Length: 268
Picture (cartoon, rainbow, N blue to C red):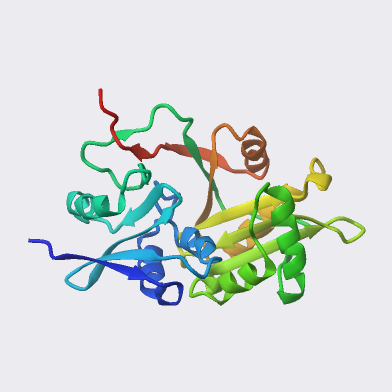
């Protein structure tokens, strides 16, 4: 009989969840749910919680609420039915989507366009990207805020992310124009030697699109992950985001699968 427990981890307590997620990350592109980098990007906020499910003290799943979506990765061989039964306590009305954990009675979303899981295999690259250091933080944040309408990223949140237990997994790159203006940035997340890395997020300043800066940021982050020992790099993007899909294809990514959320079944 499974003795399942769920722990709510504050940001500074997320080390065990990150270590478990790293251990569960495959050599090729993950199939859904969470990569350690998803948690790392989540930890730019200092008031969030990460859930860690344990069975007799051993981690069996980790996840968090990403708006209305519960995102979960389970250990190989975990009892998914038991995890789903416990997770339903988190799925109050309004939290009607799950990524990575089948919930009995729920359905795969066939209404919304799927997310594309794209993968890059390590190879020699040429890139204008440079690593992001402390002195580059303001420019890295500027790119993020310019690239994504409504972004709440700040220098303080960059520091919060980098000081979190996931900070050591982050490999960020920044590309500048010939005159030194910040043009594009990418954050790569390492999951361990021989395991697949993740890009999250990637952005290009609107004033500098169409000049290959985003591609260079992507390739720079991929190369940094490969140099550290990543077996591959994955990125997940909506299939409807044609510009992003074209960018990743130009950097050598290929589509390996589609992801769809599980959604609460609607009454007939």
